[in-house]
Length: 505
Image (tube, rainbow, N blue to C red; front, side, top):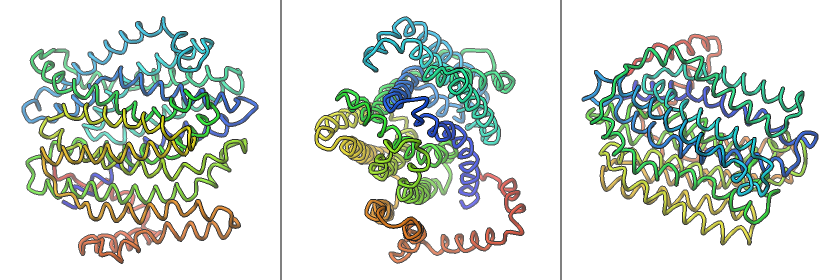
């Protein structure tokens, strides 16, 4: 059990580096995007709307093929046909991406008028469409790397993509003066480059053959997930579309900045853990320790995530002041803790869903996320006129909470897993208080502020200990971890020890 958890942790760290590489693009470019010499506050709001529009497109283009590949690749009945499964998935994704691009690109100016209230961004919309189509294909290839536990390859290729996109974006904006168009042209080139450098890897993992009955099974499995994927993306973007519908483009810009900061937690922690454990979920269905493994994944991922939530929430004020080139963005720090806490429920929902995937009962997911999306829309309509961006953030938090609760109920009903919910709620209560503490101490002097905020982060595990949060074996593991990594002379050896970890799967 411990070796499996360590292996999960190792892969999560490596995937995290790859995800950091992806997110670094957005982070490193925040000073450029918020520099009034290159973009106005409204321009940054437009960028936020274009980014979420790209996410919506990927949800349509990507369909449910990555989930189907994930479900069948390690299925014991198809272990001899893995290359065929991958080939069919990649081929179908390429056809879907190409078809959607040809269908949508002639309508680019219309989309620009609807989303940005002006048809002048037609060329940019076309670049977003092309980039989304390429990204959907990239997702299939990335899914294969995760299924094969090729975490180093995944991270390396994403780092290369980071360098390409980052360099091109700066060049096209600063030197070519291309503005918003330069951002998405760089993304098109970066996504295309990612496919090209992985052509050899892709070719080695395909067998050109179609199994039509299997393909039918994959589509039947995935059809409910299409609605779930689209509604899931809608759930995450309704807030900014709602702000835009009220002609609050400045608030869209502020919300986008806060969301970029809080979403790092999802990408670096939640998605990295999900990438590492997804292949193990199916592989451990019949393992004797499967229930404990599933339960501890939820507990440990929530623990690590809450540590990140507390840190990002507390230091969001200082982070925004350092990164934003204009003080017009500084008030965005107010909603960062709210958005960070919403990520906590996203993680609970993602892992709670595993039970439905195991028993192949995915039909309910589409209905659940659709209900959550409608609720989020209604909450935005009710709260934005009252509290602006705070209302939008509270709507997101509430919708994610309810989304998790409904998902948890139905997943447990179909496939019961003994999750340690009492400990999860304890973490939420303690972490929620600590995360919001920064809102009341930001008027203090910088040195005193930093000391108090650092103390809040350090106190989190000790406060949990007061409530008997840790099991004896966990305390022993923590002590061993501290002893091992506190010896800086052995830091290199400790890093190398990751390579010696063997899966028990």
